[in-house]
Length: 235
Image (tube, rainbow, N blue to C red):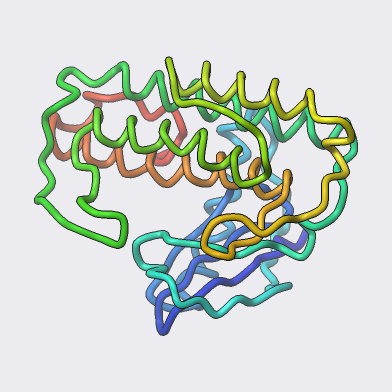
């Protein structure tokens, strides 16, 4: 089975997104480095979802986006060609279930931290300001894209309550829009193109990036085994 990858890059820095495994990704200082990581990412991603990893994986690039953004800090604005197409009800329900599992698992990881305001990481700044360093900061940052992502496709949402609660309300508001499965891609903030498919993918991807950072920071701060590997990053 081929992992169909979308390659977004800026100079030497690369992000590869698995188009047919929405939310899975790898990063690297080169395309080749990111490509080498992809089969293992898919194995872990599928196990986290409770699904069998496919056999005989190959990797191919189906779309390329040269970006002016800071790819090394996981900034992104790519819209996949496949994300312009309407969703079936079954596709939507499946991707929504993955996005909700991701939110619930991220909340469980955050809740498991013995000290949510302790970090072993040095202070660092990037394109959006100070990089979140503690479990509290990482969780709040990840949760608080909820209203932003939904607003990019014209859906009113909020960031109140847990990450799972506000995301579920956002999906409810989306589902109240007539013909939401067939909404066309629209230009949102910063001239970035968005679609319903992209919002679903971005939630899973963004959770995964910050869950990995939170889990790794937890090991550095509290030691191996101190926080649960809910997403299976070391599986």
